[in-house]
Length: 399
Image 1 (cartoon, rainbow, N blue to C red):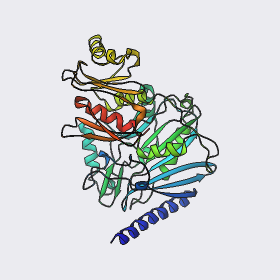
Image 2: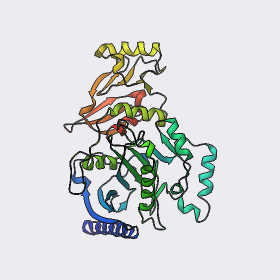
Image 3: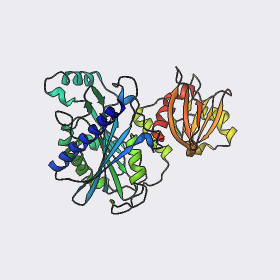
Image 4: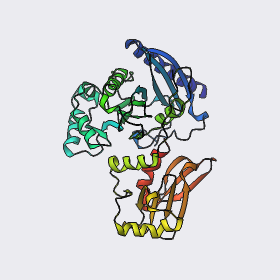
C-alpha cells in the first residue's frame, strides 16, 4: 500500500512538471531547471499552513514536498515554487527580481474588511453559470503610504480582470488572501511575487501570463522605483517567500543568478508591527507615540523600569489588563519581547533566539509555543495579547 501511494505521489509530481513545461513553452519561456525538495527531511518546521486552508478536511495541511522551477525569458530569470500536501498540489508562488527599489511595499488581494455589498457581489458572481469558474472576489490594493494606495487604485490594469483569487484542486478550495505583492530587496532591486489561483478549466496553469504582466507593470512604475531599500518587508510573508529569500537572496552567487543579490538587513520588528497596525487593524496593538501619558506611565512602572528600558526603545506594546491601561503588557523592542502580567507572570525573550512559532495553545489561546535556536521549545503566557502576538510571530518567523 505504501509503495502504491509513493507511486501515486511521483505521478502527481511528474504531471505537474508536464503542466508547467507546457505552459512555459506556450509563453516562449525557457524552463531551465526543476528541483524537488522533501520538506519532511529538511530542518524546516515552518511548513504548516494555517487558516488559509480551512477547507481541508481534518484541519491544517502541511507542506510535504516542494518543486522549485527556474525559468528564463530573454536574459531575465524567474522562479515558481509549487508545494504539495501528499498528492494534492497547493497554491504556488512566482518570484522575480527586477531592477529598481520600490519605495513602499504593495499588495493586491481580497479585501480585509468587506461591506455587505461586497459579500452580496461575491455571492452573486459565484452563482452565475460560467462566471462562477473564475471565483471573482472583492479586492483592493494596499500600501504603506495613503498617496501610493490612491495612485494604485487609479491604475486601470487589464491584468486585474484576469486574476484568480481562488485555488481549486479537486475538492480543495482555498481563497487566497493576496494575489500580487512587491517590495524592495535593497537599494537596487525589487521582489515581485504572485500566488497561484485557478487558471485554466482544469486548474492546470500557474498564471505565468498574469504574473509577467504584473512584473511589467511594476517595472514601468518608474518614479516609484527610487527607494533606498529601507522599507523591504512584504505586507504578508509566507513560508514560500521565506524559502526563496533564504536560498536565493542571501548574497551568494549561484550558477543561475548573474550577480549576487542580498536582502538588506533592516529593523523588521518595526516594519512588521507597522503593517499589522495599518492593514490588520489590530486595536490592541499600540505603536510608540500612540500611547497617552497615563498608559506610558503604567508601562514604565510594569515593565520598562524593571528592565531598564527607555521609552525610545519601545516599538510597540499590547495591554494585558482588562481595561487596556498597560498595567500589564507585552512590549516589543528591536530585539526583545518583554511580558509582565500584573506581577503574576514575567518573561524576557531574545527575538534573535527564536527560530519558529508553533502557534497558540489552550481553549482561550492564552499561551504560545516558540521554538528556540537550539531546537527546544518554550511556552509563553500571552493571555489578552494573544491576537496580536499570534499575528506578529506568524510574520516574524517567515523573515
